[in-house]
Length: 258
Image (cartoon, rainbow, N blue to C red):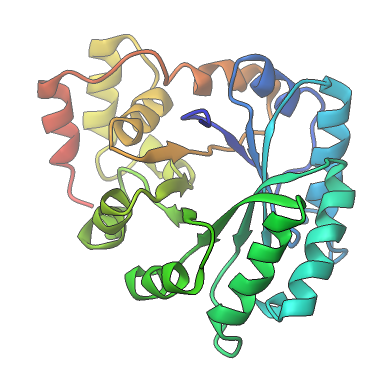
């Protein structure tokens, strides 16, 4: 029930019009985190920017944010969720994610707080980020009343480590993979695989970035959250939807050695 293409806000400086344009084009999944801050050490800056932009657009959006690993005690989870909700200026956080696993706090304690937040209407869905298979299994066992909705993982044509185990596990257990850094932080523009990506882009009449995103979107239970600071590039990234790669092109792209 969420768009296949959303937009991330890591290191996002809030250039006017970016998130509004994304929402207008149907890419209304906006992902942020309490720790995201491109300006310094003050927490919650990206959440405040997202909140202001969403209020300005005045259109429905699916808002996802993350709680940091050092805030996963029961009371801290409750407190930080309310703080994120206030910064985002939303009634309910659609997806609340553990940003990375804690080495000290049991998942049972954290997930008990997460489920309380769902019961109270503060959040809608529970997700994780950077969890391996063992941790996902533990998270699923710790959740009693609600499913594990998603796992946000680094995934791109050039970074495929999750294909070994995490991706198949998610697909088998109805867990959505939210692929961050789906454009490999620009590495597709030169170096390994760039010639193949460029060739497919030419043959399909698409841009290299659209080919990169489409390759991911053709995987089951995978959605993408590219990031841009330029409003004029939003339409290009959203143009990865509405078409698919033909078998020959996919075979060429699959053969790129990651």
